[in-house]
Image (cartoon, rainbow, N blue to C red; front, top):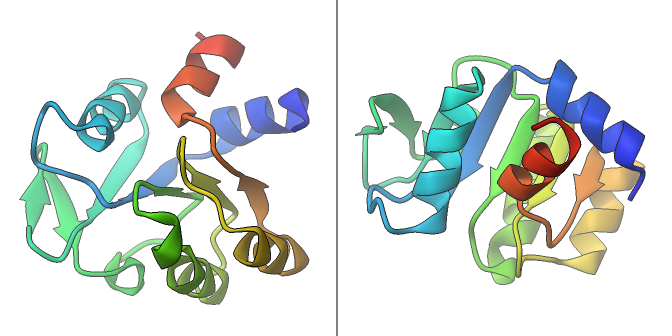
Length: 133
């Protein structure tokens, strides 16, 4: 992982879709999303069971988000990654960020070949704190 490229991604990106955002404040996706909001990112949740989480709009799928997405941040089990990557490629997202414990080698390679920046098995909050503060 090229730290300079990750730092550039985090500083240049504006919109982040959090796939698997939970309304439960004790869940990692909720805490990370709060952090991203506090850092000034425009954050959209993707969770079919909710229309709003953390006072931010929440959508059933990436395709329903009304703006281009820079980073698709994934808090789903690895088995769901192929469909998420396919959708992110179709929507021309800039990056796929698979959180700690999430990876899918074939889908990651597919995303890279489509021109997306791919980060796997890393926490966006921890990397932001380490590289940007």
